[in-house]
Image (cartoon, rainbow, N blue to C red):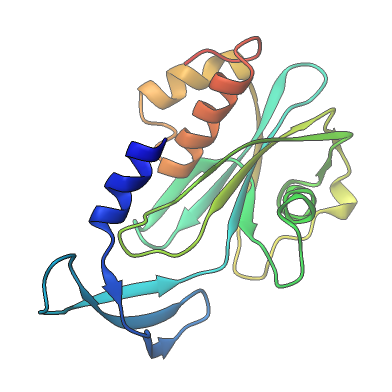
Length: 193
């Protein structure tokens, strides 16, 4: 462990205080001057300061995974995903996971287990994505309240089909693939990728 920490320290750049360039609805754009180790010349980097995110893999008692389809503006098409969203200020990732599950799908969980955390893109993003497994999910359609900017279709799929949906790129959202990887590593009794 000491060797790993020493290597990381040797690679750490010196950062100046970041400057806010623009505030948007989903992240702040920052500019930061940073100097590599052992050098005096600094370089400009763009950083997106974003709140943490959650991903939820919802499972019913029958072994079905609750999936969603929604339009994604970055790629201008519909993607197949799991519920998730932004952790609001003052909200825990666990509370966010349960809230997003109900809002996006109308399903409620009887259990919630943490599977892992991922840095979505540490090259320029500051946030963490927390992944959870929600078990004992049952439909409560009346509780469903997607955001006004979301058009979501809810689907139920057999959990054992997930590897083939990833392989054929039906599921191609990187953080969703990572979520199922977390599940496979944490609960190989449920899923093997």
